[in-house]
Length: 321
Image (cartoon, rainbow, N blue to C red; front, side, top):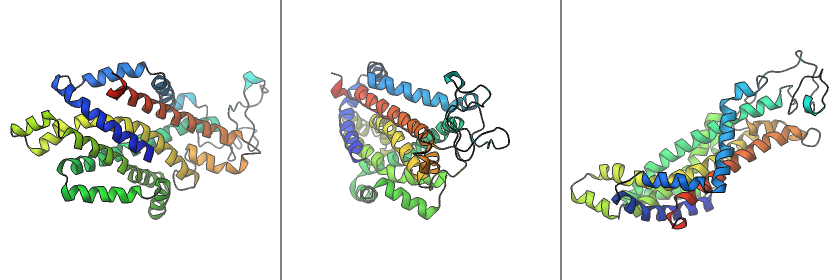
């Protein structure tokens, strides 16, 4: 989190330097169009887009891909044994046995279907959490950076207090007070990640508000609110977009951690962290039950991290001279 925050602040300063030139050229979308072309030339960004796209397609098409209902208990419907090993007919599994690509979990449910539906839950958690955190962070950071003074001091000291706690530990404490559940987990993760967005937004606003086109807006009598919302915030969005992409990966990991501890998504919800927590004692007797959910988390987090790094490289003017 600290490393990502430092990179975000550095990027904000670089993006602010480029923003004045782009606005003066009269093409506010030029930076984004150029960055998109650069992103497709970055191998890491392309790989990240492919991985993220694959997981999003999986989540959307889960009812089509999954052969079973993720919460369906197969006792009495099939002759299955507890923690049955994967059965794939193309790989030599007996044709008369029901096919379970990733096996059956301890509650006699198809593991493949649960992993597929888990993409919906985990991606929803990631996007929703970041949406709330970005919205709150942008508002607080913009207010603190533009008006400064005691308002800046109060907001930033509160952010410093939140940053002073380990993020996952603070999230656990918040959920412990509010009670376990996916909604409270979302709220807790949004709170602990909010300071990063607020500080990056503040750094970007501090740089942009000193540029010439902002001074020109003040000279013609534009109100402070209009200047902030129309002239400053749109040009301060670039580092936030990069940070939020990386933040989705962190949110998915934090949510999985809370669910693993029993504080996030509750059974029988098909969520990767919950699946890991439920079958953690079977890591040696039935390793496939923890391997596949863990692999899904790894692929998703890797995809967002690679995409975020690619976007940062594509949008940073210092790397694209």
